[in-house]
Length: 273
Image (tube, rainbow, N blue to C red; front, side):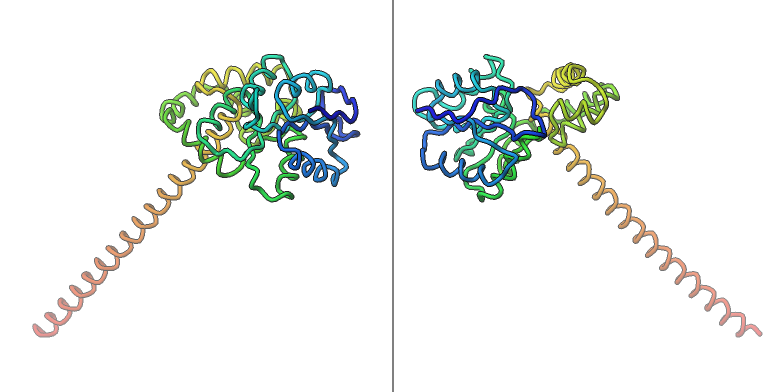
């Protein structure tokens, strides 16, 4: 089933117009609920909806939406097949998976196939709307539970990647930090005052050097590294504080011994007197 509302064939998100959305889900009630939710915000507009992957591919090519919300579990061409087909067709829209599945394999496959985010349907409606708005302006959106799953899936090569991090150029490190903030190539280019094409080339080099499959994996890995480093820093600080306390304690004991020795010497001197 296809429902098309307007034709908004534009590639980049223009702040003067609503961000356009394509909804792909085989549950009519959910699509209706999402449309009502999106209608509450003037910065968003649903331009088309469908209940299957094949029609979704056709609609994405026709409307060139800014954002596609894609379910995984659909009859016929499922969400992962649809996602892969869209990327192979060079569809530039940001594609966000919106599903009930928190299966590790689904998460990793979706990110590998080029999803720009992964949200679970058990989120509160206002949280879903917030994430949609963030995705529409180029930010990465991932449910917290999914972040942990993805972080675990890419943790195996952490030690090797940590060493590879030193091989990145200063510009590549700057861009990696921006990716970790969830920014799109366009927003990174604006932030660093360089072209979109330059950012794209750097991102490609970063992924190759770190042996990661997508910018989302790079973002999750980088955030995970920051958390790990913070934990190590806190542990070192705790150890230093503990060491300082031990030194102070030992100094106090030593001073007490010195004082006691002085007292004994004084007492002995008085006896001799």
